[in-house]
Amino acid sequence: ATMRYYEFLLEERTGSPDGSDKPMLVVNGMYPGPTIEVNNDDRVVVNVTNAMSNASAIHWHGLFQRGTPWFDGTNSVSQCGIPPGHSFLYNFTLDTFVGTTWWHSHYSTQYTDGLSGAFIVYNRSETLPSTPSIDGELSIQLSDLYHRFSSDLLTQYLSTNGMTGAGYSGTTQGNEPVPDAGTINGIGQWGDSTPSYTNFTLAQNSTYRLRISNHGSFAASRFSVDNHTLTVVEADGVLVDPYEVSGLVVQVAQRYSVILRTNQTAGAYWMRHEVQQDAFTYTEPGFQGTQLGVIRYGVDNSTIPSSALVSSDPGSGSSLPDLDSTALVPYVPESPPNATFSTYVTVSMQNTGNNQWLSFVNSTSWEPLQGKATLLSGYGFNEIGTSQADSQLIVTIPDPTSGTQVVDLYVQNYDDGDHPFHLHGYKPWMMGQGQGRYQGQELNTKNPMRRDTFVLPAYSWTILRFVADNPGMWFFHCHLTWHMASGLAMQFLVLPNATTSLLASAPPVLQEQCKTMQTLGQA
Ligand code: C2O
Image (cartoon, rainbow, N blue to C red; front, side, top):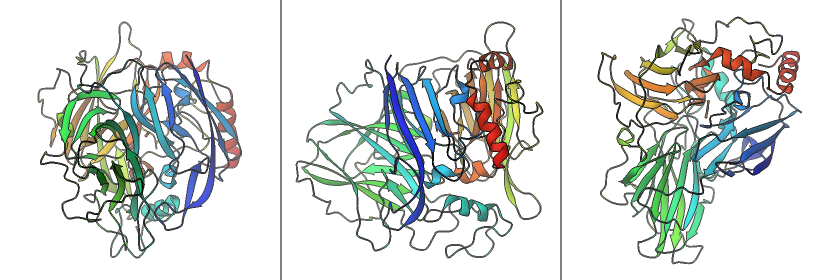
């Protein structure tokens, strides 16, 4: 195994991804931050230095952290935050993950301000489904973009007055902050500033793998390339049966690989990132929801497409329909074992009575605990008390007396919105989903899709299954930053005895971080 070493310097900077200046949080002065590229048998070592005025923690989305749950980078769960002025060394292996993922800050809404980047895990022997050879790869990182600082937006969102500002009017309690624009690889277009585009000059008649990820905070994105068919071959690190589409909606925190063939007339074509507005009640003045990039081949490397910048029927590469993510089939079949343990949770968003809207899993609205991390507390590892806080729901999956524990997680979404949820530490099977309440419908036990980030549609049930063989404290939450920060989260304590034994090898600096954070009084 090779060690891959990265240095991350976290700083507050002014940036202008779409031509409009805004306050940002960035790694190494870049937005998006550095791409981590490793092989599946590598060790990844990242030295994170926090030069910002708030604490931070960096999460490696979709990776399992088997045996190292304290490197999961989740504030108040796996660590207490890297205090300002401190450094922390993340040091982990990839376990079985191969494919496309991303890293981001997991401290409040910090990633909304720019703390994210791509994370690609190669496998030397990987061959893509019915795509014999690849001539090149492109990393496509999509995001929504907010001109205001996320902590200011969050304060307004959680206040009893709700959102205020030019784009909002009337009663706005419970309505999330909405973006001004979006970016492709950190570049967007807004207002009347001279537009810049992320652009790629490719070889003609070649085959490319586009690794697409949505690093956004609230909006899903529809991605397409004018005049080109895309073939989906990977979702969240799982190879899937090839699926040809005109375009695909990528939910927040999801990833896909698509195959693009440069087989059209030589020229320049728009890549389109259409910020999906289904969840919006308001729009900011000047909101620019269609964001463009350029793919060109067989022409000069400054050629810009001549077709309309914004069309009413954007980006149809063909007459094919868009991706139906519920129809994805894993290329390498797996049959889930029978469940030995089941747990049931509800998801809702409610007015707490004083016009403050919060999100709930069961009756708990998740909040971080100042200077505490639940993985570390309760094991004698630091001096923090053992009791579960009222503001954090923890479901314990007990150590099995023999064999393995197989968990069925029933989630009932009582909210009128769709929520892209993410489970840390695992890649569950999607056993079933449907409208209304679960009423004993048959589950899909034959090669169901498995992925780490999945949508819980409005007023629906979902059943997820996973083999609980990765001890630790694992977060389960809506990935929309506004919802995460208003409490749409819970934790699984998987195998408490095994977790306690593991913690003997956790680095002592984690304990010092908690103490420093208690002294600073920052949560
Ligand atoms: Cu992308 Cu809880 O993480």
